[in-house]
Image (tube, rainbow, N blue to C red):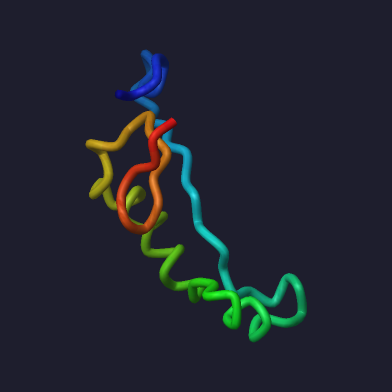
Length: 72
């Protein structure tokens, strides 16, 4: 169930996004993250892109991730 205030009087939509463990260079060792089954950055980016493109509007007010929605 969406949280109250997820869409305000101005029409702004709000989601929480869980990008998952992502193999980035922030640790300076993305291969170590890949060894822990980290996602490639483009996988997480597709989640955000789906939100921007309106493909996740049914999930407004929810915590979304690559495979769906996490329960609060």
